Length: 171
Image: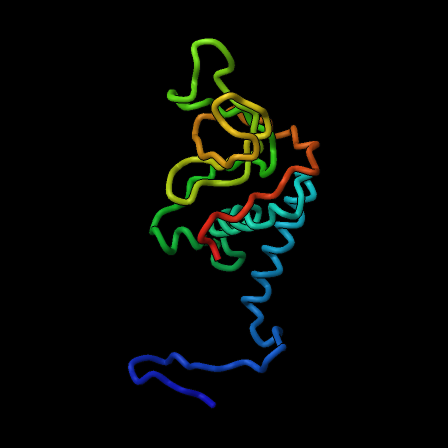
């Protein structure tokens, strides 16, 4: 059954239950993202509990890659400008993140060792998980910062690193 909008040539079609092949474009995109997540998790040595962070990063990257046929990125279509990808880093690599001024003491480290988890959603920063004990930041805390030194060839040997617990109120 087809329903057509009078104002446009948009048709509403429903697919048969349990037949994902009827929605080929979405299924291919899901497969691409799933493959990217698997590679990112395997390469980094992080547990499967970080699949959500890997998926957000994979989607961020995909939106800034040109389409095979049109050579235009989804970002360009949305923002009307070419994306800058010079800030891309290797997912799951180690990094030293400079502590913010309120957390720095006169004596002691000025940075904390972390693992790169992706790109901040609402700012021009990166997301990290803290893997080193520090007086002012708890272990396994997710922090966002722009001030970091990345070691893109060094990955976590902490395969047992706990996954990020869900926030209170998340569904």
